[in-house]
Amino acid sequence: MSVFGGDQEIGAVTAAAHEGLRFEIRAPGVHLYGTLGEKPVVYRSSLQIPGRKRPVRHVVLLSKTLFETKFGSNSEARRTVMYDASAAFVLHRLAVRFGLPVLPEWAEWFRAELERRNLIEELIGINCSPVAVKGTKLRMLRILSQGLRRHTIVIPT
Image (cartoon, rainbow, N blue to C red):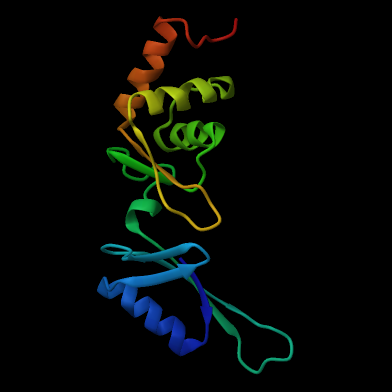
């Protein structure tokens, strides 16, 4: 969640996130209620705009689950949340997160394999197409090894 405002608005939103309170998000065609869970990750900044006496405050709040999808975080996680559902992005993010040995040419096959195994779930998003991929590093490696054994994906000579 990204919020712009003054000191009071940013303080209220940040406090609500840390308290685990529910947020209401409205956009054209979308009306959501939810929380960021326990221990949200908070990034704050200020924007000095010419002609304004005070800076505009900006805060980005991420759930711990989304934050842990970065490289090297919680390699034992059973779910990875991504903001883009494209095959190339899904393969790239999982490869970066878990250190998987992959080739970009495998993206379409890998995405189809995740769908066939019901390991990918579409989520609701605003200005993005988020998905959650279920599975650990070991599970992703097993999927890749089966594809190589069955020759549905290959390593070029």
